[in-house]
Length: 90
Image (cartoon, rainbow, N blue to C red):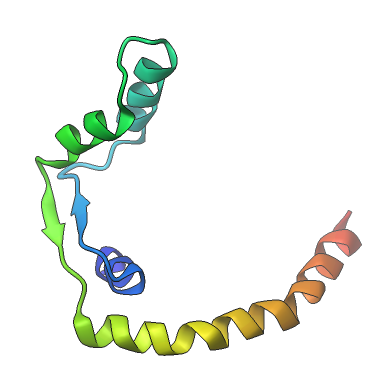
């Protein structure tokens, strides 16, 4: 369900790996960082191609699009309160 929500919010299809593996992602980044591979996107696509595709719901994506300006306004107004809480906890 979380993947469907993300696809709807982004209004983009997502490729989901069959198995979640953060170590695998770290390994891909390491290969590129060490110069043993050139293209991180290509490596990730080859790995993700073995998963399933989750397409966004047009109705849900439209609703999230309508609500996004409300979220932005709320973040702008609540932002100072978040920072007060962090500073008070220090």
